[in-house]
Image (cartoon, rainbow, N blue to C red; front, side, top):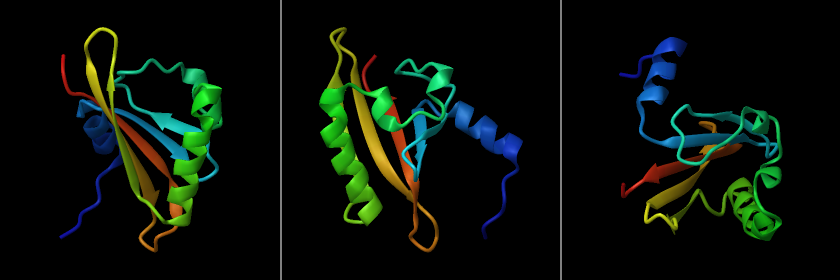
Amino acid sequence: MLQTVNASTLIALLKTLPLDLTFMDAADRIVWFSAHRIFNRPPDIIGRNVRECHQPSSWAAIDRMVADFKSGSRDSEEHLVEKSDGRRIRIRYLAVRSPSGEYLGLMELAELITG
């Protein structure tokens, strides 16, 4: 049985998750990110196009992934990143869809997998 969760409980739940979460809407704008951070993000990224948050060398890959998510040809992508300090980070990108399948945006989940 599905029950609704009030906003304060949902916020507490999101703050509890040990994930760095960022949500980009269907217009490719950053609209939300979690309090738990692996990657530093200044508050002023809210409202920016996702391209403005990355180096130009990444734009082609971002554009391809977003186009695939919007078309429905893919729903996820994953990368492992090893930082110079030895930390390993798993980054997952997930298409967010309405119950009818409409593309609503993209969720980026970053998780530290080694300390």
